[in-house]
Amino acid sequence: MGNYGIYTHDFRLATRNLNNAVKYARQAGDNQRVYLALCRLSNIRISQDRYAEAWKYAQSAYQTAINIPNGRMTLFSLSSLGTILLHKGKIELARDYFLQAIAIEDDTIQPKDKISPQNYLALIHYLLNETTQAYQMWQTALKTGIESQSLSEVTRSLVGLVALHPDKSRQKERLATIVLHPDCHWEAENMALWVMNELGDKPILKLLFKQSTPTTTLLDIAHELLDKSS
Image (cartoon, rainbow, N blue to C red):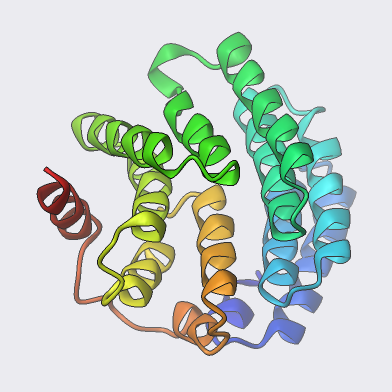
């Protein structure tokens, strides 16, 4: 319901539609739709550097997720909260949220549905400026994602590798390709927005939400990065 506003970069329209979606989904008792709309609202506020509002929406998404019998949603919510703290420079608190996400994954997610803990551990190393360990773990997670054909795993790993890769010439193009992909993981979107904020280039956000077809595929980027690092 809010996707058109997002893709046309009309965040006011997107926010209005998504808030209506939350309202109607709550009236219908559809917690999954409530959760998804709240996640989108949080991502919009992150893209606008409005982190207090992003946190409010993400917290609401988390409170909704813990009442849904789906450990993945709770895991994703904790990861989103951790990413917002990352945006705010609260590294130790962010680390705590990612560790909680790992614990939930270990306790509740079936093996076939698992998202590699390597991704979370890599991000924690990245937050602590331990870039060598982070890069190695993201490489491992990417290879696992390619082998298992898990696009959610691939997108998260790619954001980390693009952020750390020494070749910065195609960084923006690669990040845009990842986030524009319909199967891009929520956490990968948040991480990509954070990386672009670090680049200090706000116009790149417009590229992410325009309606276009990327000329490079996710697997193309994956193989390029793995080939250049081998």
